[in-house]
Image 1 (cartoon, rainbow, N blue to C red):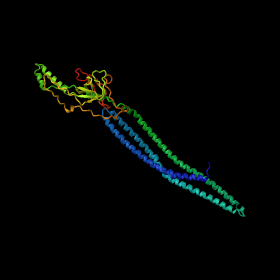
Image 2: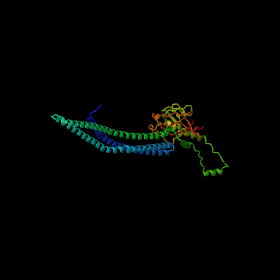
Image 3: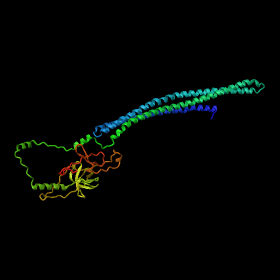
Length: 452
């Protein structure tokens, strides 16, 4: 659709005004926002460095632990890699400032002066040409008024010359308006092209940064994830250390120098010690039985336990009452009698808690010792205390989000052989994934230790 010269001239002037009144002010605002963007990224990278420095410190503390050394090394590696990523981001935004923000700011200041001068030149030339055209048209009107008299042929030549001048100036005006409009539109497009080109370069820089960051992270990520897949895995060195402490120590006490001298003197006259009398034996048995009957500790189960095919273990349900027949815990196991069935056997100590109501038996008087026997008071530190309830663990994977029910120990498939020949019993904790694993007691013939 063709336009008149006046319409084209209006388009040219509106184009210049758009650049001066819309584009350049928007560009100034964009420069200010770009500087704010730089400050935000700088603050982010600074905070990131502080964060990953703190993570590295935690890794250094973990590296001191014999069981968490691997995790400490992984945390230090994560910190170093992320700090390198932050450094690459800083370099990208240094180029962003140099090649985009600084360049836009410089060109905006220059462009305001240039576009103002160009627009004024166009307006002045357009006004000059328009004045010449208006003057020629005014001259033609004067000649036509004069030619209406008696001597009309006298002004014919001048009128033709004036018509030619007007036509020439109209053609020149149209050419000037067309070229001015084209130049104005191209000036506008140059600025938008410049803006797009600079942001394409910035996009290319960010793409390179993300590619490099992805490569740095994905190379290390599988090895990091592999190290933390199993939180219960313990290094062999730690297992050997713990098992070395659990192994019984054989200590041979040194004999007294006085006894050694007596033994050397009377080595030829060794006489066995006399056997205890029946009365003394009976009295000792009566006193011990009376003390055992005075107070027997009872415990209440908090988890069910199944013995399976092992006859030395005791099966029970949650809430059952067990009377302890052996008061001292042995390697995490207790020996007792289930009250409602009378069955006896070994059971894990972590599956029960102290029961406050103790059974006070009748005092038994021996025929040979009618005087009542009072059980010796135990020190306060020997009294069993109720275990403190623990909150649910937070450091667990998705499969442990539900309440954990302890597994039932089975002598067939729950033991784990160790290099020194001992066996590791099943998990005896109360839901804590970091519970200490205890060894099962060994089998002896005098039933002083659990038969498992």
